[in-house]
Image 1 (cartoon, rainbow, N blue to C red):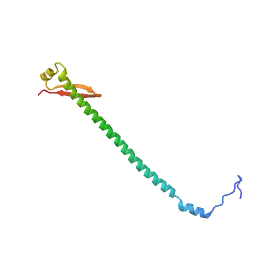
Image 2: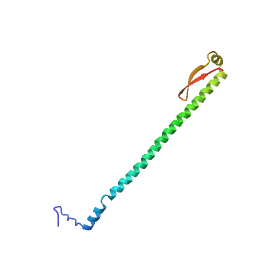
Image 3: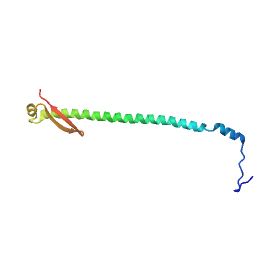
Image 4: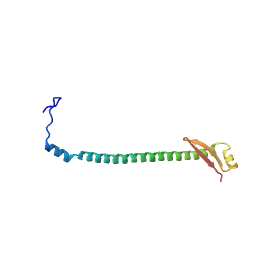
Length: 114
């Protein structure tokens, strides 16, 4: 039999229709399961990566704070040893407080006489 366009109608095989009906949807289910597994793995990895990044940022800030504090203490010791009149200023108004900026942070230094 011929169509108007000149092509023949496809002959249908009943065996292939039965096979296609019994397999219908299996590929979709497998693809959806693979997609769900992929989403779970990727979301877990992204959560781990973001948590790790936040932890390293907090550690970096803590280290900078510690270094700034140590530098402030060293600055006060240096002033006591080398700056003329600083020890007398501390003795006259103990506790003596001043601020300096170290590593981009404002450090408050309090020097007391005991």
